Length: 194
Ligand code: 5GP
Image (cartoon, rainbow, N blue to C red; front, side, top):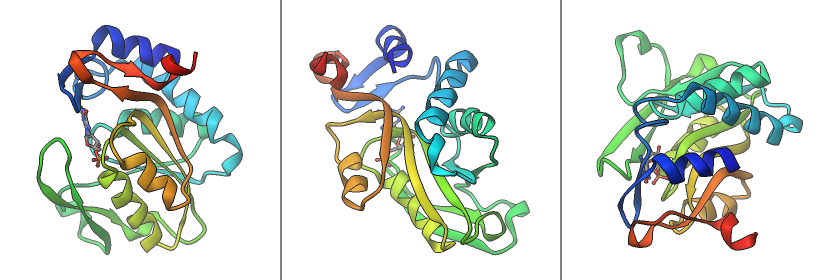
C-alpha cells in the first residue's frame, strides 16, 4: 500500500536492525485518515471471505481493526492482555510471548463473542515472529470458529512470522512488507519487484 509505505519512510524510526518505531501514526499517536485507508484496503482484500467478525489484540491492533470493521460492517473483538473485572465470564485463553516487551502474557476473549458459525479476520499492527497472530488463531480455533485470513499492517518479512502462518495454510495479507531495516534504512519488498 503506497500511502502506508510513504508514511513509514517519512515518519518511521528504525530503532535497531529488527525494530521499527511508528509511534507518530500507529502505536501511540494515531493518524485517523491513514487508518481509514487501511480499513478500506483490508475490506477490499477480504471482501469475498464472508467475514462475520474481526479479532485483534490490544492495544495497537484496535485502530486498524475498527476501521476494517466499519468497512465490512462487522463487530470487532480485541483480545485482552489482563483479565479485567468485567471479564469474569467464561474465557478463551492462550499464552503469547511479546516480541517488543520480551515478556509472556495470557491473552483472553470472552467465549460469548465467538462461536462455530464465525468466519474471522485477524488484524494486527505488526508481524514479527508470529506469536501474537498465532495466539489469536488459537483463541479463534478454541471457539471452533474459522480463520478466514490474517491482515497485517506492517510485516517484517525478514522475521519468520509470515512463513509460519502460511505453513499452517492461513491466508496472510500485509499492507507493507519490509525486507530489511539494515543500516537504519527501511527497504520494502515491493521496491525490489518494481
Ligand atoms: P510477533 O508476535 O509477530 O513476534 O510480534 C507482533 C507484535 O509485536 C505486534 O503486535 C507489535 O505490537 C509488536 N511488534 C513486533 N515488531 C515490532 C516493531 O518492529 N515495532 C513495533 N512498534 N512493534 C512491534
